[in-house]
Image 1: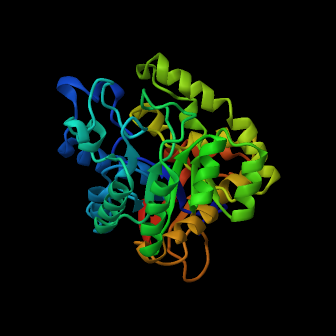
Image 2 (image 1 turned 90 degrees about the vertical axis):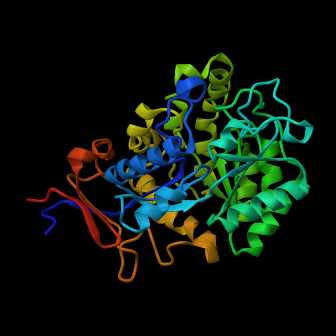
Length: 373
């Protein structure tokens, strides 16, 4: 007896980095720099916190999430279902390259990249490298491929406006993914970069903050998914420094126009948060529900965080680690269910207090939290 509570499917975060969400920026270098043991422990602890916030599923779009996924699947930890991308495919000087400016690429005798060392990215140059990186991820259990096609906020030397892979390189990853029955998701912000991604066969645009009307129309016509985020652009750590903070401000300014275009063209859209190296912001994951209310109704936001995410997850096809309907409440669907104190259709802010308002959390038919009296 739910006793008047609201029942929903478990929430789905479609853009998360489990292994780096709770690592602090200042700990990424020097004597406190993490090793893979620490990263794995952090991922496992974060998985448990994510589930307690009501997210019974997440798509990890870059990072060492396999250990946490395996432990959650074996019920050794309380964690969500995880669709792993494993190493994001990036390039020298791109968003997956966090080495100092003077570091040479491997091809010129340079060292292993720091983000590669942590299992976040694979730095590649050329079609052959892309093929190997994509195949490596799929061999290791990736359910989809993630590529960085433009610069990002979290790294210093990669301009937001630059296109950072050639068309042949992108198509190589798409062809490998399609051959395995899955798809490629692309980190990209700009008009040129997003157009290149769509023309190459990318199925999911991660971010997309700076698109224009032409691109929105193209996405609608091609059925390309938009995977945007809000909170990450409101919670940058000062430790990022002036260059990265300036890039963050630039892409944050595009949010309003992007969401208005997405509504105008009825783009297929999911829910995600993308918080990295910021434990406080990760703990506030559910704030994303409230911040989206500037553009969407509570019902639209809940659809983005449930049924829409479940539909996009199906694009993993043969590589889907959890076959079955997800993100819906119906007979035969995966039994991921929440009971909520109150009605989020009337006040979605109640979701920002999961400890108080998520009375029941069920994943795969097993109850992980139950405060129903």
